[in-house]
Image 1 (cartoon, rainbow, N blue to C red):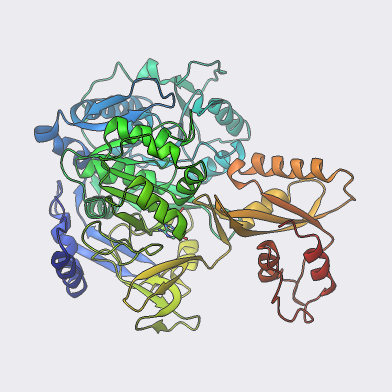
Image 2 (image 1 turned 135 degrees about the horizontal axis):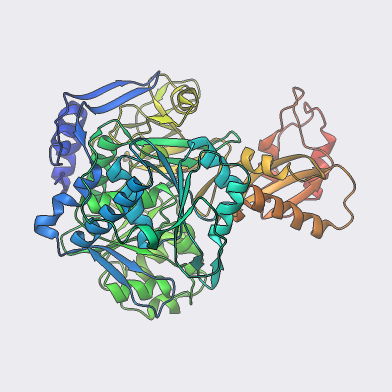
Length: 632
Ligand code: PRX
């Protein structure tokens, strides 16, 4: 197994070793896996292009490392534990042996449908075990999975399917989410009706048994998977073969497909999982994320299974049937490590302490947070009410593009500081840059967060558009990966993430590009132009504030706002619906026609003071109007 740091001396020694000899350090980690053929070069890199390859020439299959290699010793240990949406319904579990068999059956079914190495498969599913099984089945046969969060709209699903030129979509009939029963197969049908010509098959898992339409491309999971052989030889993959594509939002309108490859991602997710969660044999680990996001990929599926852990997935939502659900599950399964998002913590905190006080949470050893900055109040509540002061919080900073956790304290070993991600994991070399491209040295400083040396699970490309990858991440600063975040390094060298410095907003831990929302809003027939900014929101972290210019006078403003929200729901999905929609007659612009977002952000934040000199704007008079009509 990869290194698991046990004390501060080991942390310091590993950090030192990884800086002096990064190749040697990662080679040590990579050596702990099963490779069919060893690599001939540990690292080849050039950030300008970018061209980054780890474990060059190595041959392996990640599922042999997630499953097969554990069979002898851990075959009868639970690999995957599943808690259903309904609190009274029985949980399900799969031992490593059982999960291996299910993955092989599904892999054989995919093969029988003509899916082969390199084909792309889109997922649009609820959090059921079959999602994990089918994701691993793709990896087993070398197909590239691309999981789309099942809250996205048919249009968003069609866009991603077409961008990936996917041969297959795997979905369920319906998704259960709390009291809702969401017809996801219908969304897939709608996406296909929009034109997804590459799709040859839709594999449908019967989840609720509700009524669905059947089309020529459809095959039921139960008609093809269970009867397959439980043996499926894993495809031999090159270390740098694509493992998956995950679409994420950026500052331009179109989501980009972040590409991760097999070898480096395997090494880093296992390494980071073992260290950040200090997982010990026999522990029950639970990450509440959805597999539609990177957190679910790296820390529900791959990291824990590579480490031979028991990983739990939960189908439902934190507030169903009541606000005690998370804590009930922690008590029921004696959860040891619990990993969630600040937005969930804030939402549950707002429901009152009685929900958390009802349950025995003494099994918890480590609490994790991810996805957005956590505010001090939520941090202390999590620490005191959930952890009872006995379970250190790990504030883990990372991104879809980084593949794994980059900056985090190590529980019980390095200091946990409220609102600070603190220190990079050994092997990670962050730095802060100023706007002129100079590295900011020393402590007690603030700047743009970059990484100056490759790490194994870093983004390799954006699918179908390598130039975009270069422009977004590797062009802002020579020889650095630019994260898009601002950060502070305090007097003790501890990192505190401030937030995005680009036009990306973080709503309930979901990344949303303002341009993407504007494009969606502009689809409304009575909208000429729009500008979207983030504003502080008590529960969501950031809310979405849209300024819109209507073409014709709006008679019923509430009905109009409803239509705008429906347009966004149709184009992207409900997660991108604006919280506030202000109708304006114009937007503040520079003389070159650029929208002054700084002004709009300030007004949306409820603080219109200190807007600075607006007289140089093309239309300074508009600022007063926008200020007067502000909704917060
Ligand atoms: O702004 C940072 C924020 O989430 C962004 C990455 O979003 P995504 O790719 O969707 O991945 C989320 C899960 C890894 C980052 O650029 N972010 C993530 N973790 C933290 C955070 N901000 C502050 N503190 C964190 N711990």
